[in-house]
Image (cartoon, rainbow, N blue to C red):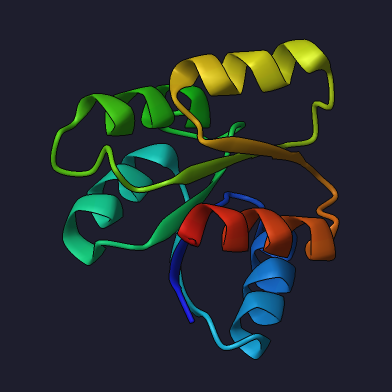
Length: 120
């Protein structure tokens, strides 16, 4: 199973999704803002990142852009997560460098498929 970094400021979302991923056998690391997420990408070397876009300190848009500009971590796949389901939000996430995009509330089966696809 994978080492997943979940960057999410909402405690309820963080708790629910991290428990579900852990039950599937994944090791889940948690960061509460975009800056901490970037630092953990460098220090923990996750295999994939689930990045909320509406984060404090450094939002997910900027954190993703910075991660993809950093040669030490730019190969780590990032799935952007947001409650904004507009096509323009998806396009913006992909332009920031996200490898995929999903909406909240999370459809767990669909998200697992995206994680598996990016890890294979």
